[in-house]
Structure formats: C-alpha cells, structure tokens
Image (cartoon, rainbow, N blue to C red):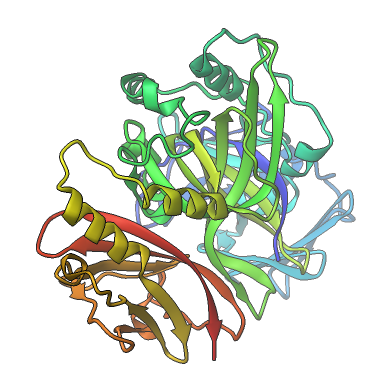
Length: 469
C-alpha cells in the first residue's frame, strides 16, 4: 500500500517537446533559483527528456566532485553517485536507474554518451537524490528545488501540525481563497466566477450536504487530471474518493477549513504491493466535514489547480504522481449520502406532480432490491396489489459499483418477479476496461440510475450490497 509522504504544490508548465534529439543552446537549468553554468557540454532535449552534462548536473546538485562520490566505470559505461544517504546508479543506454540498490524508476530516455561526454536525464537523477523537478516551457528552463514547488505540505503532518493560514475575510469564499493562499495557490478567475454564480448552493452544505447535487456534473477523475484547466469553470461530482489524510483548521476569522487528501480508483499490484491507476485529489472545503481517514466520500466542487504528490510504496520506492486541487462545496461520506438519498427518495420532488403516479413511482424505486451473487448483479422490482404501481415500469439507465460501471446502449426494463434484471459482472468495468471481480463477503455501495417508463425523468437509487459467491 502507498504511504503519502508529501503533497507538493507545483507550477510545472506542460511543454510541447520535439520527438527527436535536439541540441538546444537555450536550454537552461536553475537549482534553488540559481542558474547553472554549463562547463562540461551543451544540454539537449531527447524525446521530451532534458539531458544535462554529467558533472554539470551532479556538482550543481551538491555532489562532491571526486572519485569517491562520482564513480565512472568505463567498462560498464555506468556512473555511481553518492550523496548523503543515497547511492544512485545508472548506465549509458539502459532504461533502469537504481537508488540504494533497488530499482527507482524506468527511464523513457536513458543516459547517453555523445562524443565522449556523458549526459544524464536531469529529472530522474535529481528526483532520485531527493529534489523536486519542474520545467518552464516559456524560458526552456529545467527547475530543480530542495523544497516542494509552492511550499507544499506533508500530508502526514495533517494530523500533528498547524499550517500558517493568512488572515481571511468573513465569507466562506474568503476562507477557501485564503486556505488556498496558504499553499501559494490563487483561485482562478473562472473558478471564482463559477462559485459566485452558484454561491447560494455552493456554500449550503450546512442545510443540505448535497446542495450541488443538481448542478455538479459527474466527471471521470482521470479526465480531470488530464486537463485540469479545462474544468476551472465547472462544478464536478467525484464519487468514492477514499480519504488518506484529513484535518480541520480554524482560521483567524473563526471559520473552519477542512483539508483532505484522497484517491479514487486504483488496485493493488501483486508485484510492487502498491496502488496503481489511481487519481489523487487535495480537497479544500469551507466547513467541517464529518469524515475520517479511510472513509469514502462524495465531493462536489471546482478543480482549481494541479500539483504533485510524493508517495512511497511498501518496498520503499518513491513515486511522484499528479494531484488535482479541488475547492469543494459538498464533502459527504458515502454512507451518509446513501442515508440522505434514501430519505430524499421518500419525499416528493418537483413543482408539478400527479399524486397517484408520483406515489406509484416512489413505491417502485423504494422497493427495488439489489443482490450480487455468482457472476451477476440482480435488480428486482416487487409486484404489489396497486394497479397504478404495477403500471409504472422501471428502466435501468446505468449501474455503478464504486469504480466499476455499466451503461447499456439503451435503458433496460426490470421485469416483474423474482428473476428481475440480471447484469453480468463482466459488464461492470473500471477505466482500464477491467471487469469487476469481487471476493466473497466484499461490500459495495451500488448506485443505479433509473428511468420512469418512457419519460426522461431519471432518479438515483443507492443500495449497500454484500457479494455472495
């Protein structure tokens, strides 16, 4: 399992890089904001990776320039680097880089020997030595720092330290903005506009924990992380976010700001004993959220920026992954959401209703039963003696079991009777296309979108289901 080491606020600018080797005299590097002067060769970019002359890079990173700390093996074409408690080794032409005798990461572009001079991949070597690395495309500069970009905070410190939060105004929006400012992040103009345009519901969690339910758009986390700026003006819905760290902070205006780090998706790799294919979020919520580490939550909010997060696997290998910064209007435990939706399903909604049909529909969806056995999910709709109820049939638009979902090409009618509607577990897939394969006794919150007859009305039904083999 992963252990979060630190949450890093980064202004890394994505760059468009050439796909062949390009020598670029203008390629520059700064370490702790100090420019590096190249004496041992000219740095260049190969297939998107910045390669820096060996000694220019290592000396600038604080490695002593002697044979004890920089050991070149001409026969192997390898270099061994010693700095503090770290031993880094890589070889020209090889895609493996090792840290303290264990594989650190796979390189997209290996070290190269050009005209007798060795060039090292700057990012991989610097990160192996404990630095944080970014790239400024506008100035063609590799950025290296000993501290996280933006002055990030260790997630593990959430439970035992205070974060210096600047003076805040009186509004909930001020609390969000100044909470972000503590991480040197400004609220984008588009994001502030989206929040202000929906302020009456965005900051209404106290009276309605799902106040943004009808506004927030369900969005795949992997889509958000691909292009965070494209969602600056959107209120998104993220479900089944598992909390890794969470803490409330009291601002000097007396208001509470909740900070949380969590992830969606992912599965355990039997090789590395670590999580893969997951998406990380850092959540800023103006208020106190009744959630704890390990809980799964639903979040409605605006993606306001991006960062990176440093992780270590159970094998001790550090990994850096992107993290989305989310200004949240709603943050509610999945179990509480289930209770709330169950209660809402028993109350009338909408301005114009036909009481008999509304009662029939509510009776129908309240009576839906969901079982997960063998290789299928079974959804049954009970028959009653009420002819109005029996005349209202239910169609299934989609089924979601945590990170696995199934959306048929057209809604599927639930037949009356014990057999009900059967959906193969193979049809429920995650973002990688892998089918749901539950273990006996495993429990799920199953969310079903149902459609009333041939109408366009859609309701959500949530059931807590235990899988039985």
